[in-house]
Image (cartoon, rainbow, N blue to C red; front, side):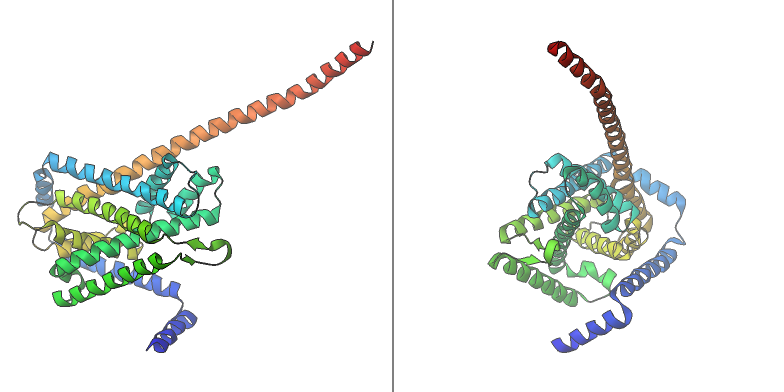
Length: 352
């Protein structure tokens, strides 16, 4: 069986290429989402959406904004954790927070988070002596935190509420529960693997030392807190009636997030929204759409705008600081001939 799987993997790698498969999968997800959105939104009434927007209580929006802020605060620890994992604890938290917040805010909106977020990270960390390899390692550890958190939240929540995932994957609840158990089994196997001995992956300069057992638990906790905050924000923007429990919303939110991530669409635009509309069938479509619109403003547009302002001000400050340093250097260099001449004259005076 294992040899057969290896042969299939080798065939795809040699004949097709995993990158092409990834592109085809992304296009397929986006295509399906576009069809679903078309069918679900074609009879939407704008007046009803506006009514639903007005019906959301201001204090619910404020609570959602606080949860979003909590989620982005948690994201800053992705970089803080990664820096200490790869052996750079000298980088202070404020720099890790700047990098984590801006890289994810921009990556979430532009898409291709690995590349866009990596470019932002490199711009920030290169000023502190880190090179491209270090930044790649940070991206890897941060990505591992994301996936471990997703696997834990999705596994536990689907195990508890398997029916919540059925509208998305179209599988019966008992199959979803089996998938959740398999996911948790893989997660516990990984945890036991890193707990049993120091583990490294990669070769040469690209070698990364994986977090050990206790620090992996911390890593998973960071990921869980991030996802929980974001799901709570979405939960606050949905109506109280019908009474859908938070665990169900959590299952739907994480599943929709993963689909959006797999599509590589900026912000999972269209894919995330289609999954949420399909899975939250208990609510009126207008109410879900209103909640999604406010969530996108709070989670995507507002942090994106703040991140651009922060990076812009930082570039201005760095440019002004560099200009002052260059002017000081020119002043020193211009003074050197005069100092040499005065030194010569003093020498001659002393000789006389």
